[in-house]
Image 1 (cartoon, rainbow, N blue to C red):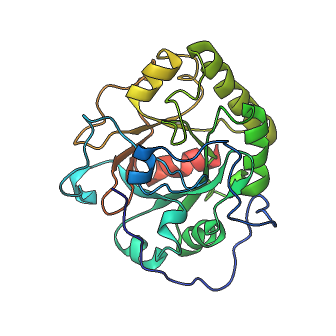
Image 2: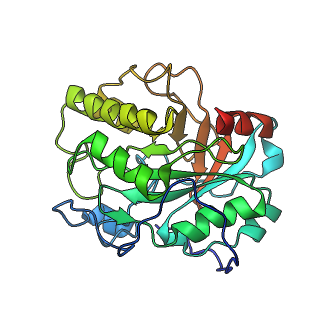
Length: 279
């Protein structure tokens, strides 16, 4: 099941990006060496580069039959995350629905950039949202440091303008092959450290980590290496975030449904979202 496209709204003008966007073919596929799996194809991923945050969740994490409304979560702030699957997003409509922050997929691997990234990233900023970019990790295709560098160069940078969130590392199920990208627990943890260390060296920020409890336990051995430095963005399509991975004492963001598109709670009011943006 894949979320429906959001009605397009062309945004005029341009808000300066905090990092450069690729000038080459925006739809270039990452060099994974593999085609999407059958499961990925069912989720709407038909070519390398089309992966998105939450493309697959465990069988116990089924989508909600109804969306939780903003009023149902006192002290939380509503957000969304988008990728090329949403195309040009109607940010005015999202703002009117109570969305105050957004993340847009910028890159995947070291050769793919989201062709809609500029409209999504600039449009959310222009309407008044606090925005950020994310990178879909492919640990089997290149080093963590190389992918962090590519991310920063193609939209994943950060500036202390009060409206730009640190770039997010999306590390989850492999749409192109084995669940853990052929890596052992220790090798996966080392890859993640490589990405996060390089990202911080380039931006000065600790990147949030998006994952599921099941994937984290399966592929990192439930590593506790990042809980004191990197905010957790947990994915679980249910009425609660459930058991958190590693030793994270709380989640910072929670992707709670993919219907009709990915919706997320920030674990705090808008002042906490701004605090994360400001570092």
